[in-house]
Length: 298
Image 1: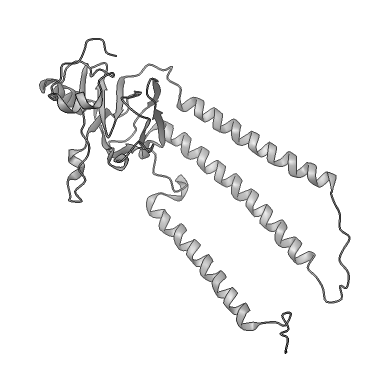
Image 2 (image 1 turned 90 degrees about the vertical axis):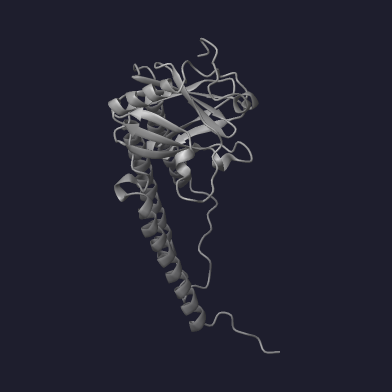
């Protein structure tokens, strides 16, 4: 039986490998270029921040990626250097000396990653503390109540509210107009007081670059200062049941005058007071929209 010489060069195979490598690089570059449609390079391809805190998130994100890329370049460079410098040569007949360990090298590989993690932890903890700081007085306080599968908004200082129903996504244009809409005044500090009627939800406005869980029996808070007028998308970021994907809402950042006009409109509709956080889902869905809330529920 004839044996094949597996050590013989295979030009066709080498060309195939080269083509596959080139294809992979091309796909990676294409993916990177297409991802630019969702963000800008200076934002780390994140959504453009429309709040003061969002700029801090973008800075942390970019810093982490720059550090990771630097480590990657050094690591890939060392790997390629070892491949080239210590490749097997034609006149090599014996294996090089095999070492079980190298104490200085192992100390280096331990100390450097620990240092990197400590630096990343420091900046993450610093920015997290700033983003969750609610010590400053808020101009607007909104109690956002999550429920399966919609949202209620209690405007605390204004003593009015808006209750939402589950979205009906028909695929037709204009479905967004039926979603519950949260109004915020531009340039003013808003504090979100997050609660849940049933299971764990998560309040997320991607353009704010910040989200926070809503846990039954617990109150979570954070503040934002919107810096740009516009309409933005909001959604639940925690898998909460069968219709989680339809738990959507709009956020309209408007001028202070438009905000006050919306508050007056809600009161004219009879939405005065505050929705009680203890109301269950069935009661909210079965009773009249102009439900009379209990006093002092917040």
